[in-house]
Length: 151
Image 1: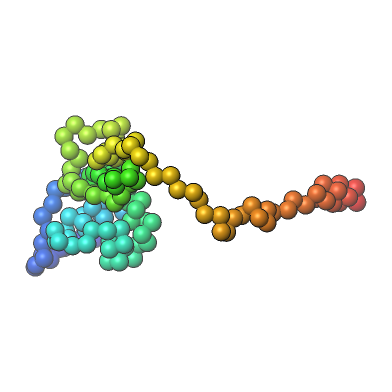
Image 2 (image 1 turned 180 degrees about the horizontal axis):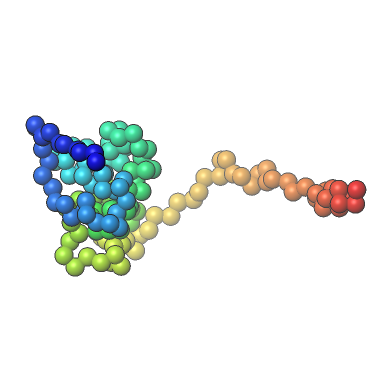
């Protein structure tokens, strides 16, 4: 029988065991949340920043954050600019899902509704239009396949 011993000397992190015992979370999501909870409050909490201190890509970090969001450990608040466009996102990290959280109400809340007054209408640029040289269809494909079947 193998025996594992843990020597604890310094740099401790105190966190809830809730996410570690949640069997619905992947090991990647558990590890990412544990790492986020161990970082100082003034650390750069961005997907790129988290990717930089791990060997995972930004996309892998994003999928783990999305999993944590679906499970209630992360709440994402989207900002709206004055013209109604979506701006940045603010993430709130929880040691355990908030009281009353269910996976059905896990859609991210929007901080402000879009404005309908004076929308900005811009004409799209057509400098590099793809319609100038549309792809040509080969009309001879049917004839070629018919000839190859008869052989």
